[in-house]
Length: 320
Image (tube, rainbow, N blue to C red; front, side, top):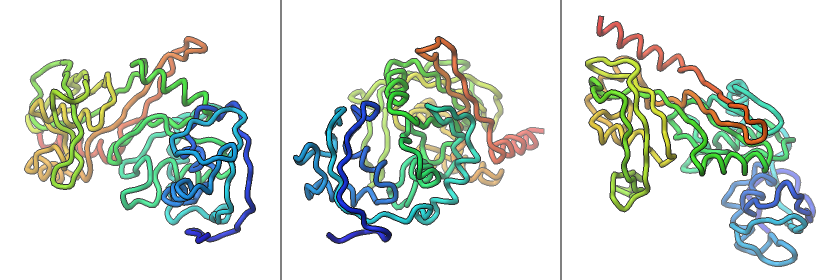
């Protein structure tokens, strides 16, 4: 078999699925197990039938059950401690950005510019970098997502049970997410709940989200924090988790986000760039939920990054 990676070539392995891993998709299990192996290679192994479950072929979306036996073919992986190029530095950066960690969960203050997953020309994202930095970790999975340019609170589960519990809370709307966003113009809508139906589509080869009656329901509460003539700072609490939800709803309300090169205003973005804004002004400021086991409210906050604080300071000087 041709290999896409360098390093030791182990023998065939037979892995029995523990109860803790039950319910996980086969492809996700393989990506986590074969750290450093490109996803494209993992899916090729599945297509060719070289990965077997209970001696038979299995599809990528097969849900593993406790007691299943997974056959892993010989596949070269990077030497331990030798992550993909850029992975080590990104992993170290993320380790320094941890807001909280326990035996079930990591809460990150994700820097802007790092995607949550590799792909689209990126060799690594948050989860790949964390796995490279912690090769001994048996389980690391994203609980939810943030756009690449969005900074702030991001959850990573260290146990399958924690992932399932948090996914249930997210599905039933019991996780409170609050963002800080700088929008164009003087916000005069007060505190308002915006409700739209959003639909993903492709326009000019680019994935975009539009307001469309055939789309999925999206709801957000926008609250002004500081109102200016040029721009206004808002706190946004999202009730649903649709792709680009805040960005699209703000633009639809006539107040697109600063630095938004997809839904924003070019002249406004150029004006903000002169004030030092080099990315989307959207920050996941806090995330909280009631712990189902203890009934305790868990709340984690990420401070506004220095680059965004500097933009607000310069805006204040312009007003003065």
